[in-house]
Image (cartoon, rainbow, N blue to C red; front, side, top):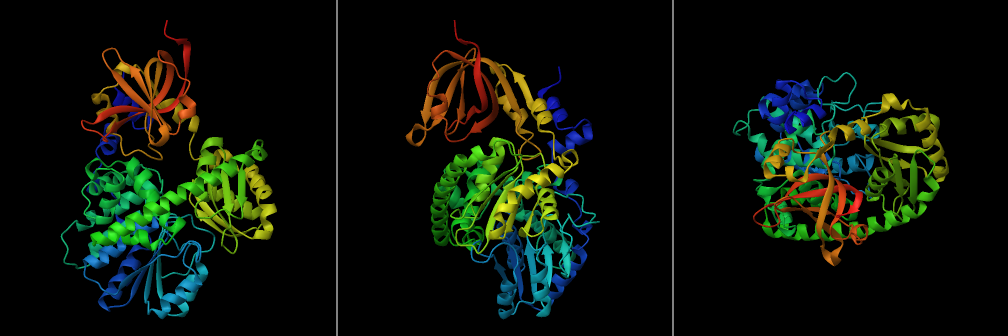
Length: 560
């Protein structure tokens, strides 16, 4: 029988010794692509070096999420490190300014004597803003990863792997990853008094964004995430250190789950509930007192965000009976904040296995929303086809395969759902499918005995980390496992831990927010479980435990 490592490699389509070596042992030099493969990189580097030599005012214009903010901080840190003083960062307010670079923002920057604007994680659809910059003699470099629309902005240089004909191999690189490639190129061409390879210290921000933005963690992205976590575990950033301390996470034990469930949500909470610039300052401040204030502000914002999202989800669930027979979910309310509806869209897409479009208005001029794919269709393709069917609905839309955002005219909301559904039916779903979910599930469910679960097995699985989109955690199937104890923990006892019998010991299996699901489980009950493996570092010594993905009563039910 093939070893567990061989089974997991095969499930990922890795069948040669060379491919296995590259996957299991990422290498910074070997596995990162040449940044000059981007078609716009040479021009971008040349004008940046020219601006530096002429002491021009450079502005980094970033998106307000956990891709754009780390990417903006990454570029900003580079300029500060080389001692360049005429540098500033601009992150638009989600509710008062909206997504991307706008004409109004360009006018503000012109008054601040900006000579060069470098975008991060935005700009590829901002044709009017780029034209406005050109009128003022401001050059624009666009670094972005979102899907390119029909009309490209007339920027001085565009660095985007999605651009037609672009030779950069990693088409799934995120916005901060793209900004990191720009720094790599500048380090190659510029004569800076920096140690060779200094840019590796910026991998914490590139890796953070790569994980948080949920791009495919394969190929080059796997390398960025892998080394990003290594640098994060040694981070000197006082803002991140204080946030981790508040959340009881030891930096040396940091995993992709801590990025996805702790760091990322708090950075995103800044723009969803307050000012995105607070998150930028958290990543760049060197002042411990300022870091403490910022951490507390983001903790408060995240708590408020959780409460508001819960309300939206409850209200959305109450409306779901209207969507039972429809292939696409389209739900919204004028009181919902557009900045947090994406979280509801993600939950609905996962739960109902359909693309979900959720919109709000709050204080916005138009209806704005977020959309998530269930993996069956490219979400931007779907919106593009919707525009073809009815070109009077969208003010704007964009994103990548699995996630996107949109703005629509309020008086056209009644046309939105019918047009989306028509577009969904019209698309050739076979050619638009991102992956075959059933095949992945079948290949990743490996049946084992509960006694097989050891630290040695965990270390074998951990070779495949970091896990995420395109490299999901292996799911193991356990049959007829006996429950010796049921524990409820956390605030108000809302989480569950099942203690499962092994031949000579026991092991815990947890699932969050599941008191109602498990409250009637009796001792000595036998269950069939689907689980993932994890290391709990909350106590010492560290604990090997299971995370429950799904469960059912085993045939026979109770122990005889």
